[in-house]
Length: 231
Image 1: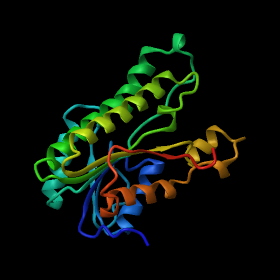
Image 2 (image 1 turned 120 degrees about the horizontal axis):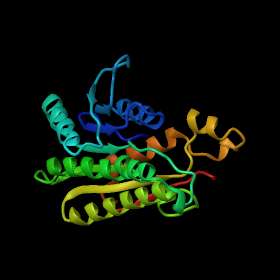
Image 3 (image 1 turned 120 degrees about the vertical axis):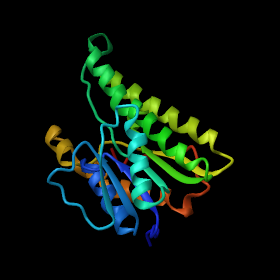
């Protein structure tokens, strides 16, 4: 039986991505009101109990604005699910460009910092809340030719653990899930010869996020939870 989040207000970043769309659906099906953040919602469907929010979260003040907007619209903020992220690489360290390095830091680490900072600024005064980020197996099990991506995700993991330590005496929890390769259309297209059956399904990640957002997970804080499938 899935947790019931009826009456809860959830902010989901990266809501138009392949994983973000699934996560948004999972939380709506659990009864939550969802504020979905994307760069643009033009032409996108907006289901009931859904608040579309447009922002470039790599900019320092954008996260604060979307949190304030959701609280003004929905009246509260209970959960932040930071799905937004990106992938780039393919070169060894000595060939990695400034653009690749800075882009991965902006998308995977800086944006996470801005979102966690804004979410915690709202949650800490009340002493309650859930924050969950999408980390990566690559942040703990580094492979070659992905220095910018690996380091940006490792930094995200350190940010999660630091924030968790800072709120350990409250009813706020901060955790991350660490998928391996996710079974999306983009990944299948990029790796057509792979065995897709070994990849992690977005629905599996969504179910884990939903549990971490619920009261059932109140004793889990500062965890980096692997979701590797059979990859």
